Image: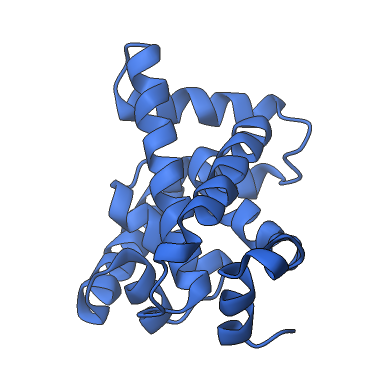
Length: 180
């Protein structure tokens, strides 16, 4: 794995940008895919959002100042792209965010790319009922096993607030699964 500062320098240098960007995509595409997938749920939508994320990263790499880690910056872009996608989708369909979540969960049951069993599907339904911030924090902590400090960099919020959000999310999920 190339050192992050060197990779950023190569990404910001025209002569090395193409090769560095290929390395960046190959290094982070799977992690970002699953991060986005847990937000938008649909495989095809995830591919679209992932592509938009990398386009934004490429277009804005010269504005990256190194104030956070590169992957934190990319996760922030991916998160914002995924949330924007959901908002846009709900506006196009003229329905609210909770209704879009219900549609996505229903589609997940017939998605050939979804490899989960009944328990995974029940967990996804429970997660879908969470407020946006709790959903993001839960997914990053539970599935991606990120540290609170990393999540704090990505979501630009305090560690204390994240711990509270995660605690509330787990309690709501437990309650949902008991009732299901």
